[in-house]
Image: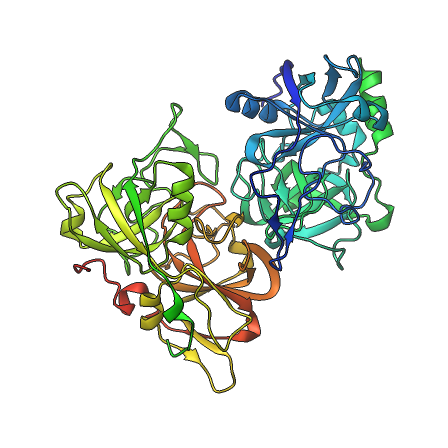
Length: 286
Length: 292
């Protein structure tokens, strides 16, 4: 946005419980019923750096989902929250504890925040948190590349830099737009995109929570959609899903013509976001 | 279609629906692939002059729903209507000046979509009641156990060309084959509801968008490559889903004309025959003629 300074807005979020309908089952891609575990709410035992394929969950996120009971306020919460934004617990047994926004989930309803395991164990659904949101509208590192869903100062945590007129990005792997499922056609400031990958492949090694991935032929500046020779870069924010059309989720951070990027597919050597670095980042920033 | 099935076991359920108004929010605008704002008609109401066999694209609209857009006022009763209604099911207008006029289902979107005689349709508007004679869910082919059938009425099945081949595969006539890159919004949703938006058929000339789908027509039968829609809509290499185009022009990015799914199975269970005539209109489901 022409170098204008970003605006910081304090938001109120509520710790989510996760919801079921009358029927406990969902149906997997082969027609088998299963009980979805970890789809929202507070999830223990799943951490940044873990494989998206190891745990028996459905869209499980490494930490807690934050929501707002009023729909429009929930949309505002999700739209404005960005990777790296500090989160402070205001009520309950964990009041005063600090966490950090990782990304967001589909439906314009859920922000994913990372806390240490001992804080997560003290959280309870309904607890209130304050999110110091900032990042939407920030000037991109490189003209022609749209940047969204990330606090500009948090970019220092990611293997992203401008070199020789290109945006140099290190990623775990590269996937084609045809594997993008749920989230396509939706506004990327409010949704993630699910990758329809059930296991590692030749182009995508073991994907881990907090990794960066590149998606080819995907324009994710506004709504996500197919556009040849465009590229979108995002961070893996939740683990896989047995549901057809769903899978590990990616919050888009950067999108532009492929010629603007120099993408390094780092495979096993890729260093994704870690809990320690993220939490240290918000402590040091204050 | 020359295929044996369990059609004689299927029940008909009589379902009530109502023509639903177009909806908007106070901001009005949405954004096209290049970020330009637009405000256009499309979903809801009674959309005139677009019938089966007509082009799906080329209209100044977004998410064009041909004919009547029908739902039920109550959420659970609406799911019954959306899930149980099948393509080709008979529909009768039950109130208003067009009471008694007949039509047929061309597919689902956010609503059940109904085509009927063009002159009679002019007398239908928002709030008019319709009755759907829902029959088809549960349909299965005796000799094709790998193929899951859904949203397909016995009426449409009887009028489709193709069928069981001597080698055991199922011959299906389609007017187009769609690559997995085109699958847009609708991925990850239930395949008994709404449809699969196809990208790459926008009415804008911006580079990199086209996937060669600009000549689709409403009512076209299409084959979706690498799509498994048996229990929802997902990407799966080596699987094929068959659908019928029920909606038209979109400017909203990541959206487009969309097929409602009628079959899904391993690709080698099908023999796909390209046939320009593979359209509901050619199968006797002609919305320009009275239907009863």
